[in-house]
Image (tube, rainbow, N blue to C red):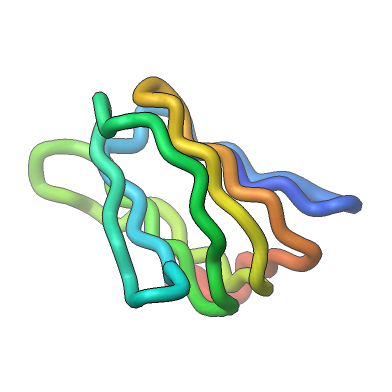
Length: 87
């Protein structure tokens, strides 16, 4: 699961296969079973992929914030998130 949480809204993507996000040292991807980590994020776009063909199921524009990866879930905490990046 990938969850993007702001003070006023949230987005949830169940059964996501990969999430690519803007880290402070460049974009990085998280797959299921990823080693647990906490990292800062810069503003940019989080792209969520699903299935064997890596279909894009979400593109969320975010402000800077933090991500926590537990191996089973990805939780992104930011001030602002906007689904207008969705194509």
